[in-house]
Image 1 (tube, rainbow, N blue to C red):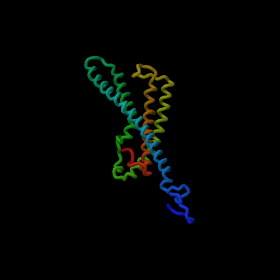
Image 2 (cartoon, rainbow, N blue to C red):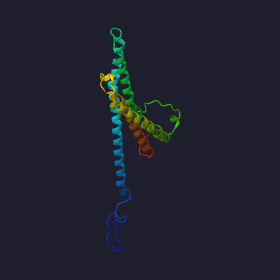
Image 3 (tube, one colour):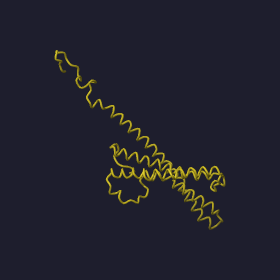
Image 4 (cartoon, rainbow, N blue to C red):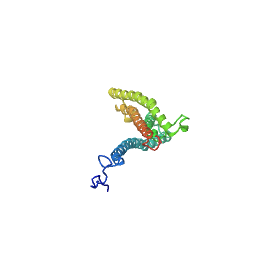
Length: 213
């Protein structure tokens, strides 16, 4: 315990600042707020990614067996009976279309899509992060906006005109099929957005590696 000039003891901690706490302690609330923000952002991004994954994996579990059964039936049944070829082929095309559109975003998150560039493998992690951000801003966003707007108009027009769909037994529900285009593009946009945010966090030193990975 220190003594004052007049001989009276000084209370412990006094003289370290107006609050009596050292600078490290004073900065602790700011660090805690930053950590809470990081946790909240990570939870938000992970929720989006899990939603995309559930949709894609769920679609695969339903549509891949359907494609296999449909193809097997078409090959075997035509040897014995006159199969409704148009319906079978239409069902196969629609199932494949749904599977592809619902899997775009998940493939991007898992870095499972086909890359045609031969430069990225030679880039440093920070350069890879910058290249992903640039690709998101220059390619993903414009493509999603254009195709998404076109797909929404296409689906709305189909609904308004009552277009019929063979796989729904001729009911006016072709808009459901056409809605898969803007919905799949929305999933891709969300996946690209989460990847972009993760790369920004990496460049700020708040993530261990660039995304996707």
